[in-house]
Amino acid sequence: MHMKTKITLGIMGLFLAGNSISQISTATLDQNNCSALLSDIGQFFNNPGLTSSGYEVPAGSGQKAIFSASMWFGGLDINGQLKLAATTYYPSQDLWPGALTNDGTATVVTPNPLIQTLWIVTKAQIDDHINNYQSPGYVIPGDILNWPAHGDVAQNQDYYLAPYVDIAGNGIYEPENGDYPCIKGDEAVYSIVNDMGAIHSSGGDPIGLEVHYMFYQFSSIPGLEDITFIDAHVINRGTQTLYDFTSTFFTDTDLGNATDDFIGSDSTRNLMYVYNADNNDENNSGNLGYGVNPPALGIVCLSENVSSIGTYTNGAFIPYTDPQFPSDFYNLMSGYWTNGTEWTDNNGQGTNFMFNGDPNDPLQWSEVSAMNPGGDRRMIMSLRDTNGVFQPEEEYDVTYAVVYAQGADHLSSVTELFQVTDFVQNFYASTSQDCYGGNLGLSQSDAPTFLVYPNPSNGNFVLDLKDQEGIGTVTLLEMSGRIVAEQALVFGGKVDFVTNASPGVYVIRVTSGRGDVTLRVVVE
Image 1 (tube, one colour):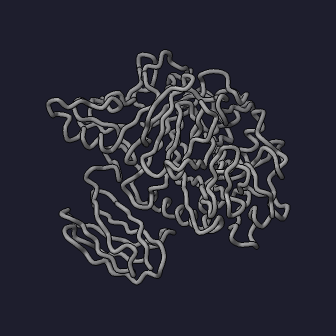
Image 2 (spheres, rainbow, N blue to C red):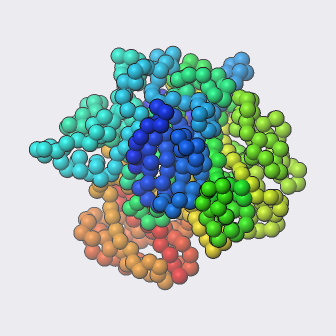
Image 3 (cartoon, rainbow, N blue to C red):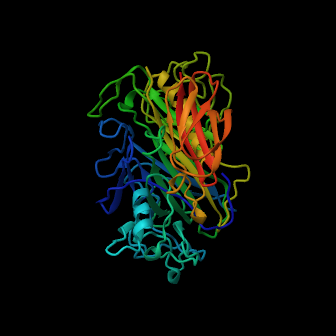
């Protein structure tokens, strides 16, 4: 977790269908094979009105994989007093909609000058806006027109809030003159929340945090059809310097039937994941199971190395259950049980990564080799750098992805999940993540596009570069990122790309001065 001095922020997002539940606005992202329910209070993948799971994959199947998720934040002030914002399940709440003042008081401005609390923008809308904003009769979509580019400086909000492309370069968001939101993905939802709205349900003292979230999905890039990305931009708007500052991704992953789940961690991949304890995920209490050969699902941190991954449960073999007090949350965030005792592995040694072995290998530590009973699991993934100091006006960015895979059985689904995670990490590493200066990475309308066939192949591919012009490079990479083959190319027409790659899953990356594009390919 790399913190930096105050800069103009950048994050992006997903697809949204809004409604209101008890004054909470919600949005459903279902641009690809995943349907993710969001809210404007920093809780993800949970239906607050029905108190039910809110992450459905495959979309439309009725099978849910996540009951709830959120991010926790905590640290100690100069006197050693804990400051904490940690939400688990509605109606508990430590975050509220809206931006804070930037004058050091971290005050919530009411009524909300931004009016909205969730914004949805699609790549198709942006392309249409770029092409037609000067056309007679063109109507700017509401969420492009009302994009939260600027706060209300008269009420001491930051002038620059959400990122945008500034056509004129004058520092003013003017969609009527061609400016537009800077997003990632094919569709995006943006949300701004704070921890100063009211008393914290966790019991923690407020920090003065302003957090910008963007959730986004791709439907146009092969290999990303089952993935949801999450960007968070975290700002300390308060006056207190926090020490041992930690952020944690919490999720209650109910994989179909919640009563027969196992969890695992992989520190080399920055991945926590859930899979079924046996090869049949039955229906349970009205929740639709995944049946025979159930999938696996995980949360991977793409931008940082995590410091700990663990679990707790509401019963079964683990004696430490849901956190009740602020110190309980912070202990879990720091790699300890709620009572402050350290996590230990199968040899009784202290560990920061619980069940960190491959469940397919009986010699490695997993819930399979430990012969645990399946049950309802929560997972927590924490970030704390060696400095761990979060000063006023500092900010940092972190990116996660929700990954999903289904193999021939419940354990091979974990193997498939590892491969999908490697692909997503490679995609993230090889794609521009900088929104500023009009660089939209793969969201950019003029980024190079290509077709590759046959796919699968014997290692020899044809790249159809269509009628594009210019020079570039084509690279074949293993999922680990190791380069297998590379050659220069001239855009235009079709190009033979001959490799001696062994059977497996690879990434083809085409690079030009206008950006990088990747596709997943299979060699048989």
